[in-house]
Length: 72
View 1 (cartoon, rainbow, N blue to C red):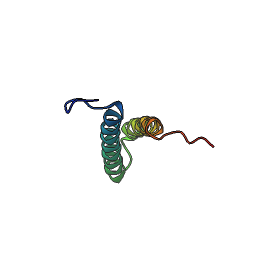
View 2 (view 1 turned 90 degrees about the vertical axis):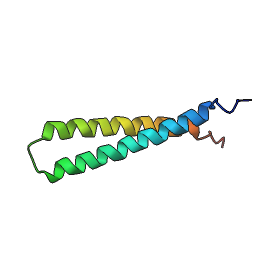
View 3 (view 1 turned 60 degrees about the vertical axis):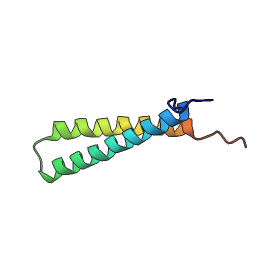
View 4 (view 1 turned 90 degrees about the horizontal axis):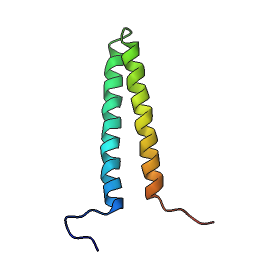
């Protein structure tokens, strides 16, 4: 059994998931702010959108790992 200082693998994944979700929301805000400024920073916008997609993929992988498989 884990001592109070030790986190289970699932606990670590849940914490990591929340951090990734926060980063994803932050990128959403940054992208919206850039789009509000109008054209001119398309390269930065593309980079932020790519980062956001990568975060989404990481979030999906962790969610899949946390979700138990259902045997049909």
